[in-house]
Image 1: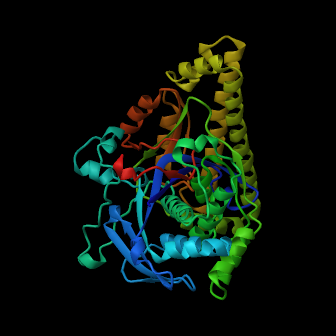
Image 2: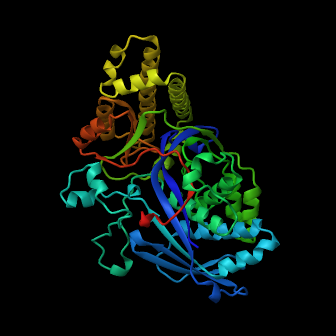
Image 3: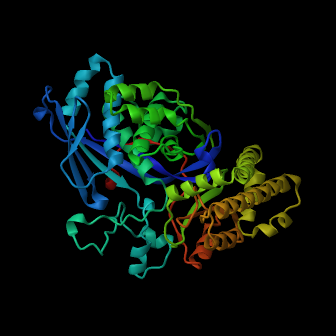
Amino acid sequence: MAVVASAPGKVLMTGGYLVLERPNPGIVLSTNARFYAILNPLHDDESATLTAEWMDVMVNSPQMSRETTYRMSLKDFSLHCSSESRNPFVEYAVQYSIAAAYATLDNNKRNQLHKLLSQGMDITILGCNDFYSYRNQIEACKLPLSPESLATLPPFASITFNSGESNAENCKPEVAKTGLGSSAAMTTAVVAALLSYLGVVDLPRTSIIGHRSESSSDLDMVHMIAQTAHCIAQGKVGSGFDVSSAVYGSHRYVRFSPNIISSAQEAVSTRPLDEVIGEVLKGKWDHERTKFSLPPLMNLILGEPGCGGSSSPSMVGAVKKWQKSDPEKAKDTWNKLSEANSALESHFNLLSKLAADNWDSYKTVINCCSIYKSEKWIGQFTEASHLEIVKALLETRDVMLTIRCHMRQMGESAGIPIEPESQTRLLDVTMDTEGILLAGVPGAGGFDAMFAITLSDSNNNLTKAWSSHNVLVLLVREDPRGVSLESHDPRAK
């Protein structure tokens, strides 16, 4: 009776740093890169004992060649690990999901719950290749740095291990990532699989995803448990946009008040876990999400520059330090960024409205602009309906340039490379390519990745431009779907 759940990775297009503080919004796009959690009973029905006070849990991560075994107390939900390798995100997801089941299910369902738990759990976690960097492997095989080379990799390819480790037992996987929020997607997928398996929630399946209610209480429960597990596993209460997009898909996000999780963090050491989680579920979750996705005929493209990674937590720390040391300048930059972020959102919404109101004109303009550089767009049209759309496109570009400018200023003031010079040069080249609406560094910025929004069929133009500058074009695209149940193991596709 396998349950398979999946949750998407994310790209924070606007709201970097600002989204940490209410009520600043961020626009977060979910992607076609998904994490999967496959849950099976570990023992068959016959060997399950209803009086068992312990449960066996096995967690497999084939991409890292890891298998971790636990025993879990069904009295206090404590996990006892008998393996060296541990994954705190999965551990908290398991503990909090099971505690949520005890906190919410009535006595009539407790026997069924206990029987399921006494069978143990076999959890397999798999992440799409897009979450990880395979650039080194492609270069080692002397293949071109292209999406076609990435597409030759087998699905859920193993992650390269450090070759320099002398002690094989302590060999840790060298996990170079692409910044799509793998821990948030993984945590959400595990929570969704567990809550579904235990009969706590009824989640949408992939085939009927378009018909679900945006205010589903079942999705909200997955969100609350996944946020709590993810924050406590990280050891800090972050903004939560990555978990939110993993649950709900693409949207405009305003963070929850941190105290709802920080109070639980303090309580777990002194009170029964199911009581604490029960209070988390009843708490005042004041996050906001508004429907958002890219306008029609626009594509999200990600590139990996190969400049080395950046540490988001240390960059966030540097920005906070700067805010304290120069509050007046920080507030001014913050306000200008906030205004520009809101303007970009408004321009995207306007373009979506123009597409809905006059599809033929919109389609004509987008297709035409996809073969020209932006400086030539306005000269291609004379009709008023076309010019209105072109004007909206050009204003959207200008706003993105303003956002980039303020982000660079913030980085310079805080002494960190939010948009490093190497990225600035690449982004300028990108925005000067045929059919490119805009480009930027996602989230906290740095050297990890860059994104572009392309028009219609202009992806090939961008691939050529980026390849000539040693940027690997990833296979990631926007997919506005959030968490869902899958009909089968993704390895069977």
